[in-house]
Structures are given as structure tokens and as C-alpha cells.
Length: 506
Ligand code: BGC
Image 1 (cartoon, rainbow, N blue to C red):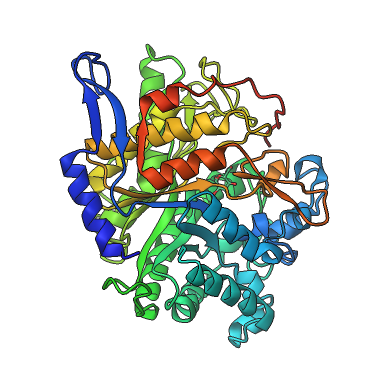
Image 2: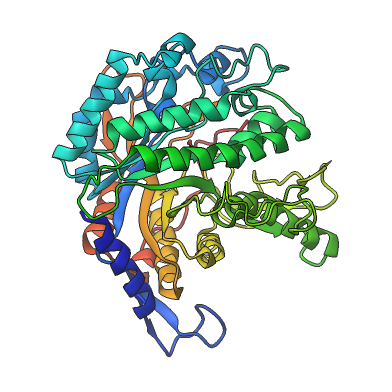
């Protein structure tokens, strides 16, 4: 698959509008707009699934998450990451599962701790032969299967030599003086080794999520609750990303698919819809707008425009960085993860900078929910895509999915979101790919194995880690193969069932 082909095709299709409508029904897109009855995805659209190393591999005990998981009470049910789907033992089989689902792309992460288990190994650039062999094998099999890799270089997890939950008072991860140097070298080395296989890179997965849960909620490593450390980490993340972006472009000079572009680099940004708890309250509305800027916009403005709202007052003014050449232009596309909505009440817990703590669990908003108590809000997907479209970059949906233990709700979730995606493309959002989270059930961080996000159910108790297709596999295959979706197909699916296997969140 040639990247320029689908970049161009996506742009042209967006102009030509990929949706069809019947004028008589009205409704979509405004009171006078015609209802959209079907959507068509651009030629060459990338359909994929996503995983992350720590969530599907095993043998990553020497990491902050490995250490965290050993602390009583940190992981729901005391689940152990090594009891997961064991991805390395199933590479060929899992690639077959992707094909069975009609997918042509796979997002996964390379783990720093697997390649450099110790600081000494990293400093000497003495990578683990076993670690490299595992990733070499995955890359070779992806190539043989003509599956496009999209590779994340940091998905929440640090080796213990960079972040140690045993010592949270000391600077950890991004806070360490050498964090940017370490990550820049990591990006350069991986770009050099795997540039022949990979054109699509993500430096950081959901940096704002990692920072806020690790440094404010304190529910992930390093287990800190300190808003000043949170904002310091966020500023370090944008700088680290920019340096990693430059390092990847310098190191990955091989155009893996021969389309003229050797590296396309971004982050995977978790963006949500922020809603006021009380839409008639001016305080709630103001807090909601502040939250939207803080969570959705702050990071993207920094790496696309070089504008950093350093004092978090929602305006670029004196003292803020404007068009910072060290940050600006460090995204070749926007990776966007979408899961849903958060509610904002101005009188909720207040923090400097970020203002209020958003709430996303068990909202009283009348929407159906997933097993984690998150509201299902497909219309918000369109809003999030519309919000980032004006950056003018191609967009890849790097994650979207549902915790659904019975598999009863996933197909409706997928098709409702795909329909909103198609409509957003019709409105002009240059979305060129969609990666469903996740290929297989996996280790859902502090929630352990309870939430089931997989297109394929994994029997974690079975020695073979048996994979079983959920009904959504056939639905996704039809979507990815035809590239079209009729509203009638979405509407024909059963209504959402109430979750029967709820998983308490953190
Ligand atoms: C993360 C994944 C996670 C998924 C579902 C995203 O925030 O990138 O690692 O499993 O959401 O919670």
C-alpha cells in the first residue's frame, strides 16, 4: 500500500464528500441538512487494530508498570501482566486474525525495557539479542503479510532504570534530567533499525493521560499527586516529542513502501468531548471550555504551531511561547484516540492550571455505558474529529474501542463510530485510517484483565491463550472490505444491552 496514494485520495474524497443523503428526511448536520444514509471511506483507507507491548507481551517485569503491578491493591483483582495474551507466542496466528478481520494495518509498541533491560546496556548501546529478535520476527511477518505497521515508541511504560515507583519523591520518567536524551537516542536507534519496515511512527501514546493519572490521580506509576509536577511533565513531554520527531526523521531515511516518504511521525492524542454538568451554569460552561483546552488542545498547539500556553490561562500571551521553532511543525499527521465524554462541574475539586477534575465514570447522562462505566457517545467522535481537522494535517484514528465482556455491544459501537467517522470525512476531516482498540483482550492497566476490549476474546486461563472471534470480526471485515456503511446497517443492530460484566475502574 502506497502512502501518497491514500493521502491524496483522502484529500480528494474529503472535498468530493464521501457521504450520500436523502433530502427528504433532514436532520444530520443541522436542522436543514439532509439525513445521511450512507458513508463511503476513501480509497486506500487504512483499517487496522492496535495493541501495546506491556498489555499483550509478557516478561516486562523490570519496568515501572511491572513493579507497580506487584504492589498490593494497585491492579484490580491482583491480576498479573504476565498472565495476558502472550503476543510473542502468537505472532503468526494473530496476523492471521487480523487478515480474518479484513485489516491491513497493525499498531503496536516497541518496548525500551525489552531492548535495553539495564541502564548499562542502554549506555553501551548493547541491545538484547532476544528482544531484537522478537521484534525483527514481528516486522518480517508483517511485511510478508502486507500488513502496514504503525509503531509506538512509548506506550506508558518506562524501564525501572528510568522510573521507579519505589521512589516517587525523586524525579521519575519524563522528569529525569536525561529523559529527553534517552528517548531521543531510543527513537534514533529504532528509526535506524526499523525504518526499512516502518513509515508510521508514534512517539508518545496519550501523553496527557499518562501525566495526569501518574502525577495527579496517582493511580499509575509513579503514583504521585502533585499538580506542579504534572504540568512540568507535560512541558517536558512536548520537548521530548519534538526531539524524538527530529531524531526519527534523521534516522529513518528508508521509504518502506516506496511512496517517497520515509517517516511520518506523530503522537497518539487522547481527545474527548467535555460537557458541562449543568449547561445553564456559566461557571460550568467556562470550566468546560478550560478543560477542553487543557486536555484536547494544549499539546497539539504546542507540537503543531509551537504555541505553548505555559501558564495555562487559555490564551497565548506574555511569557508564553509563540511559534517556538524547537516545537513547531513536529507532526506529520495527527494520531487521535477517542473513547468518549467527560462532564465538568466548576464546583468539583479544583486544581491550579487544569481547573477541575473531569468525571467520566457512570455519568448520569442517559447514555448507554461500557463495562468500565464510560458513556458511549459516537456523536462525540465526530465532534473530536471536527475539532482537530483545522490543524490541516491528515488524521489517523489510532485507537477507538469498547470494554464489552459479552461481545453483545461491540458491533453497534464499531458501526456507530464508523458512521460518525464517515460523516466527519464528508465534512472535510482528512481522516486516512482507523485502528480499533484492540486486536485481542489484554491487560487494561489498573483495571487488570476485567475489561475486555478485544475483537478476539482471549481465554487467559487456558495455557494456549485461546483466541475466539467476537461477532464484531465479521462486521469489521465487511466494513473494511467494502469501505461503505449504510445507516440502515447500523440501525439494524440490536440496541445496547446493559453491561453484564461491569469492571470497577481505578
Ligand atoms: C490506551 C490503551 C488502553 C485503552 C483503553 C487508551 O487510553 O492507550 O492502552 O488500553 O485506552 O482504556
